[in-house]
Length: 449
Image (tube, rainbow, N blue to C red; front, side, top):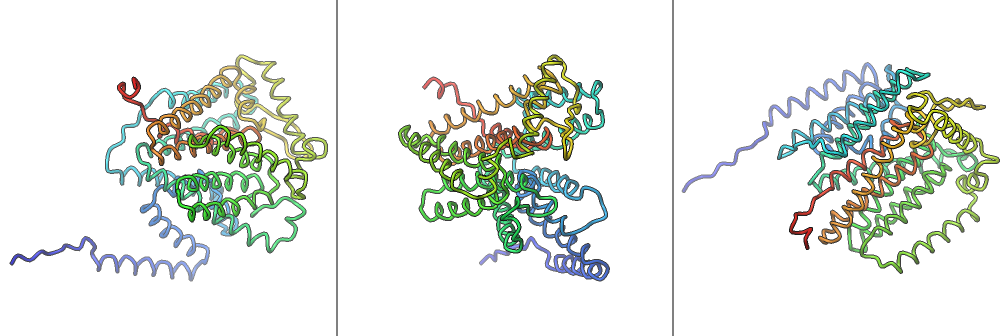
């Protein structure tokens, strides 16, 4: 009788020796510095997580690096911008790992959509020579190609891989739940958040909380629609409520309204729902929102009740928008130059108009405005086509992914209309890339049908 021998792919001696060396190094670091030892263990554990689930590395910048900002608010290191540097290391390492682990080679398509994104960067570069603030203009240009374009590319890597897309969305939800739980513990130890806007830590202010957890809510909506059984729906419904509470405490009007509108959009995009149900749900949701605004004593309701007259941040935003419009009218062809916008305020001067469209319009003229509108149109139109195609093919998972991608895009774009310059709004570019990755052309025979 022939004996079958199973070969063990793991060398126990080597693994044991590696673990022993890691633990010894950890103990030596622990003797010298607790901070260094913690960072070392996070590096080892994080490397393992990234190797197993590289999509988690993609999710970190897609949630605006909130985990890293929180970490480095409590672990001090002698380097500048530790959260941003760590993000670059994690993100590009995740891209490399994903490439290595891919079973098939992915041919990167330099298609029309990608060239439009590249053209935006070159328009930013063209506005630097006549900029009043060349340093900031150059920073915008460089960071656009370091942050925005890689996000677009990373999302494209998930093309034809719905499991990886689901891992990405699950990672976004997981990060949001972790930060929401931390927010609850932080709120219990801080009674002042009931009277002032809640912030999670020194670097994580109200807008960061609202934007990051808002994206996690969209992720929860995806899984709510993805599973048809009642138990998962209850779990993810509760997750949405947990994620929404810190946003309310933050008093962030843009993210709060963005979340509410995103929930409405997510439901409206469902092909399985009749027009009558959509109209009824929209009316019910609208009435519930009005009731909340008039009867809630939260920071959001109070700040919405006085949007301009008694609320400085909103008033300065409106002034910034007006100035950006005047500057665009004054120099419609080329604009005032990348990074040239400046508005003196009582508190901190505004160096960007707090609106993505007006930013490109006033600084880069009609060409900047036209190209960003065209980019947004391409993403929106393709997102709509994806939903229509997968609904027709009755592919439930791809359909819900397409709806989630377009909702992610809407939420990110909505927030870009109120805060952040172009590279701070890179979260608009990654759902655009996800929409691009979900694109699937019909065969001529299917189109004929």
